[in-house]
Image 1: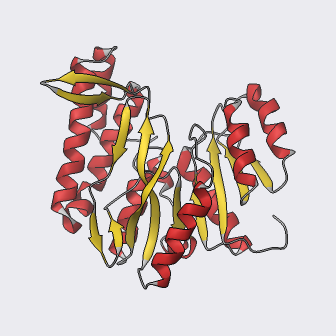
Image 2: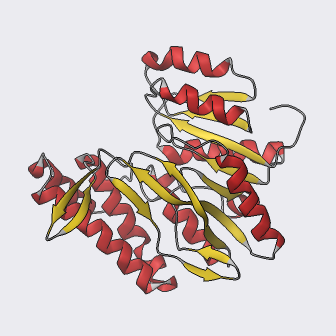
Image 3: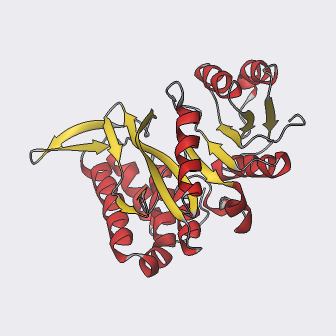
Length: 287
C-alpha cells in the first residue's frame, strides 16, 4: 500500500462486478489508496479484476468462497489499520460519487472532530436512486447533523472505533451490516452524522416508485432470499435498538414491514416473496 500513511483509505467490495466499477475505482484511486475485495466472483470477472490490479494505489483481494459484504468491508478495516489511515471510506460497486465527494466528506468529518464531536461515522445527506431520493431523520447535536444510522456506501468510518468492536459483523452477511455498526458506535457514545448538502447515487435493489393512497412509495424489487435476511437481521438487532432508542427501533421495523408487505401484494413473484418473509421470521443462517 506504499510507505505513506493516508488519512483515508477506501474499500470497494465486489461481486460479479460490471465494467462500471473500473471508473469508480479509478476515480477513488486518484484520491486515496483503495482495497477491492471480491466475494468469490466467477471467472467471468477476471478481466475486470486484472484491470483493477493494474491501477496504481489499488490492491485487489479475491476470496474463494462467498461470505457477504461484511468480510469485504473488514478487509478494508484491516488494510486501514496497517496503513495508519484515520478513516475508512466504504463504497458499493454500483455507487456513483460526484466529483470532489471524498474531499468534501473528509472536510466535514475533520471539522466536526476538531470541534469536539465524537464522530464514529458520517455519510451523504441524500442517497439518490432511480426511484427517488432517500434522506435520513436528523437532528442537530453539538453542531453536527446527527442520525441513528446510515447506509455504508459512501460513508466514512472511524478506523479506531471499528477496530474497537471488531469491525463489521460478518455473521449478518449482507443486510443490516451498516445498521449494526452504527448501533455499536452509538453504544460507545459516538455520533453518526450526515454531511449537509452532500449526495451520491446508488441503486437500492431494483427499486421503483409507485403511487399508493396519494403517496409515492418505493418498492425495492429485492429477491426472496434478500427479504429473508433483511427481516431476520433486523429482528435480531431489534432488542438492542429498542434499548437504545425505541423510536428508531420501531421506525426501522415499520420500514421493513412496509417493504415486506409490498413484496407480498405489489411486486412480482409474490408467492416466492411470501416464503422469503416467512423464512425471515425464523432463526437461521444470515447470508
